[in-house]
Image (spheres, rainbow, N blue to C red):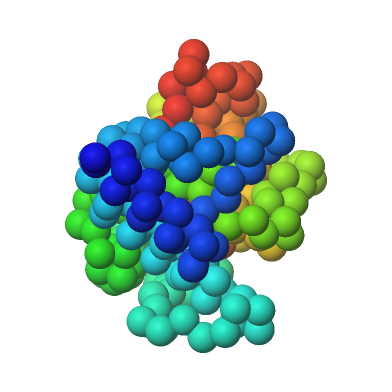
Length: 244
């Protein structure tokens, strides 16, 4: 009965909101029950119940539509949710301000407030936002989340190879970065333009004395949020350490 109820929910969403794709990039057309299983798995990965996840997907899709009002019209309730590169502290960074501990603290505070606003719009706890966005974009890349919008899918799949070179202040290691490194890398990644909803780019890391250290694959979404996806020499989501 639970799966039937979810199937009705997904089917209604597909027909009315066009928020879910039914044809992944391998050409196989997903059935409603396959979609139920997909969303149950995705919700479990994040820590949400299925209905909260489906609702968040619908609302996140609306949020993404807000970046193209000329195509999709005005989306209510998202006006004060800023792209990351429009946060006042990060604007200062882009304008050449020195990245001081005080400026980083200011940026972290603004980022947290902005994320809380987005989570509130999605009607989920902010602690789930980071994982939600990563799972959402992974599902989107597989053609299992976003509506049948060929332009968006093609934009994601573009093979343009953008390389960002980044020199670590101390030691280059592990996933993620401390807030200052993240801000500095985000500044370097500002040249990565996302025409669709998410774009993959390459980061080459160098030690502070200029020696090559490693290469990683990062992603950037339409709201200029960036994160590490995987090591460059790893192409399997199962065999490799992938966030989340």
